[in-house]
Image (cartoon, rainbow, N blue to C red):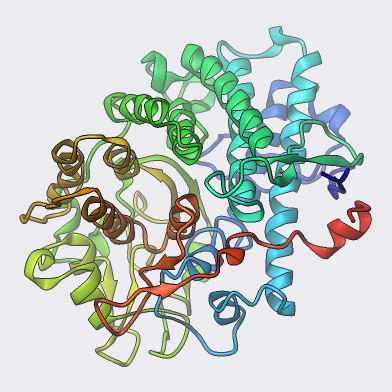
Length: 487
């Protein structure tokens, strides 16, 4: 393999700390502070970490494009994504379109800029006086930073590199662990996976010993100004364990994936949404993102503006992110078995499309919602762990049991059935769509399996879409190739 280096542009000479969410930390971070000053106090480390979480909520990252926007478009989650829009070009996998190139570039730079801040935090933690940290805060901050670094690199790997299933030895992405302007060589897929696992294992070790969700320590608003409250808005112990389950599944390591998924299920942090939280007469009272099932979420203050015109507001039938009704009723939620499925009944709507044939997902709608249900972008939820168990189960009956646990907790009375492994895989694929449309999962699911076809948003229930496997690998931005002397 040629010696290929990549230039990681770092815009953090003076560390930029964005405005914090009060639900994350009861502190007000400074807008711009030199790193040498910032890291002289515990609050400085908290501010820096909060800046990372806030940066991840931008519409270029998990606020839209890395969830219900770009990543769902390239994963064929929708029937329509507009006409002559960046998302329609993305859905057609026109990665060389100028607007798509710019969007991809923003994902790349946004993730690596967040990683740069995490590396700055981690490097300063190594030389910090641990006595200035309250109780378990040093371990928690370090554990979160290591875990987030792995989480972001994993998503970059899944977007910009060949899959493990296709070629573990292929050149992949830089795994950046230092803060500065130096270039970082590309690692192979295998090497990146090893580094991700190393960071996550360090993260879980620190968080298991110190994170209240793992230790059982009761936190109140008076404890350190409530810093360790609302752990679902931080990369907590179970978020790290769930990410490990994802990574092991991607690496085709079924035993470890099962172990990690089972621990998340049994850990007690997440629980199933009840029918009373969903099947309410008042539309705005519904728990659209299944709050109690979230092991990790971001608070997106601009959520309403991010979804407006895409899945909410004026969404004409031939514009933005639509799902075709025949596809829904015959392929994804067949009416014979899924007429009571909450995800179909309560989380899709055609109220804004001016057509009874075109629907949008309504899981991120904000209008009129109560404070506990708004501004949440779920990144890890409980059903994924059951899907991991179903995929890694060797016994078909046991695998169906995991799928039926999900269905039972979504109002579906008809159990899933499968006579062989192929039929089981089809049921798993359908469950991924039912559960995760609008959250950016389908592209990663198909890529992990190196699938040449997708169950796309078609008119006809039996239709599948051919998929060029080259589309699974996004192009690294041209600027990074040029300035990194990559040839």
